[in-house]
Image 1: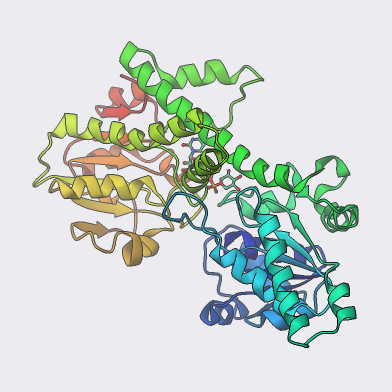
Image 2: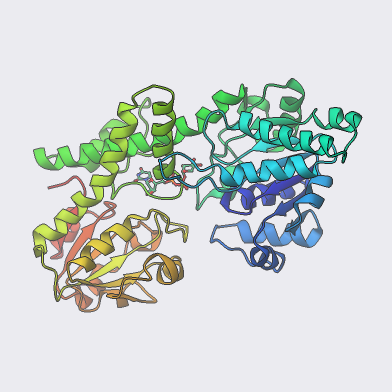
Length: 452
Ligand code: UDX
């Protein structure tokens, strides 16, 4: 099929590349000329395992194109995906200005009736707004005489469907190629069939294809993210309780995960969730509920626990070293919000590093992929931070090591080497990566989440 994907962020680029990989003819469009030029040269703006290869391969064989010309892209397509950002607005809700600007362009330039797919995470009711915006533009074209009544009637056959994306950063290509499910919200059976056909190579059998009405599909995305965030906040709260009563959350985690109804995944306590989705979507869901007259008690608590979880972790460091950290140096392992990505959005490391440097500490940081991103943007204004090319060099003469992101290379480091380099053999582990008995056995002072 011929597809246009508007927006080359995480979701857009992965969708475009994976759709091209399955043999579709895809044009990815972005207003950012520099980004498009770079993509044409095979330079990918994000670090995402496996993405660069399929972008380059499909660009080379001509199934994947990059352009800034939305008009031409629409002209050549049957289906257009809206995959632009929906940042958090001032009142907590998702800001739809980019989505509706694309809808306007679609109405303005459409030459044949398109299926418009909302792939961005958008509040319930957005498909109706997209539809109305496109209709308004078509009406204007009719009134100005640009199109005949006959053409107008033909174009009004366009349709809007919802197709929320569930991919995880760091595993995005895999998630897209082998999804747990593909959710399509469509009111028109013809569009539903078309999307089913498009996704058939990814869903193999149709079991993984879940069709529903538009509003349910829109809410499914928020419900999924809020449910996952709830699991994390629940475990983080449980970790604080475990620590207070002298239990070990790591053991409790295994104890409850073995119940298949609970499961082992997404119950790891830590420094709280970050990233571009959970924090924003949980807040947006709260706003959706309030606007609909429902008081969202659980969703609110999930957010509150997440915010205070970073303070809880920080308090371990302050309890050990005192409020005044003048003259103290801390090595920080891991800056990105999670492993296998260079994404720093809402990364717990930002809050933790800020709190430490505000109290006079110096930071020696190392991350396998996110240092450029951190240095040039997210931690640009923090003076007392030095970056190192490898994890051991960051430890030299530090008062303690703080593990914030659980990259694989931190999993079994050379603890003797660490001891040699650190001023004090102290580890604050925000991701419960190590074995307490083992570390204490070799002389470390070891602090983790949810263990006394
Ligand atoms: C998430 C959803 O998983 C995905 O389906 C959706 O499309 C976008 O949002 P992502 O933001 O890429 O994906 O990251 P994810 O792997 O879900 O992790 C989110 C955050 O939760 C991270 O900060 C991670 O460290 C934290 N987390 C995750 C925990 O603290 N404990 C866990 O057990 C799992």
